[in-house]
Image 1 (spheres, rainbow, N blue to C red):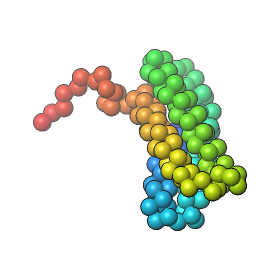
Image 2 (spheres, rainbow, N blue to C red; image 1 turned 60 degrees about the horizontal axis):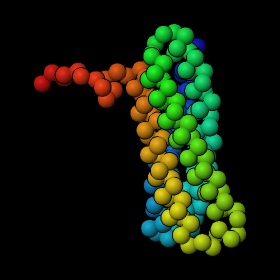
Image 3 (cartoon, rainbow, N blue to C red; image 1 turned 90 degrees about the horizontal axis):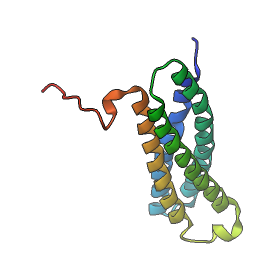
Image 4 (tube, helix red, strand yellow; image 1 turned 90 degrees about the vertical axis):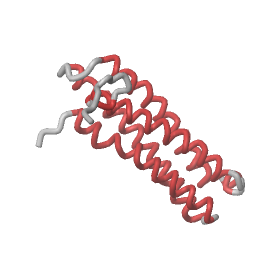
Length: 154
């Protein structure tokens, strides 16, 4: 099997998108159950998703070059995705750093609102990740583009 840069990007980029949503749900469960172990597990997942978001961005550069060189998509639609993914990546990195701080900084361990703060930040990050993923999907899937005027048969 011959994997090109676009393949690698597709393999990696789904991890921070779905992983952040799963981690949000785990954190919500931990908050509702007041379970410190579950909350800590969610924090670790956010740190991991921050790493995967950086990896996804790094593989995206090669994928962009491959797609443009092969003339498979328009540069403007790729740039929309790149801009959204850069924002999503940095917000996810902030969530990851905040989660690690909540795990390791003693003063933050005692802040009762810390899980809620991480939850709110993570919700924003997960939404941005989903938005970046949607824009990435639009690169090769014209049928999901918002400006598509295709009328489906009934």
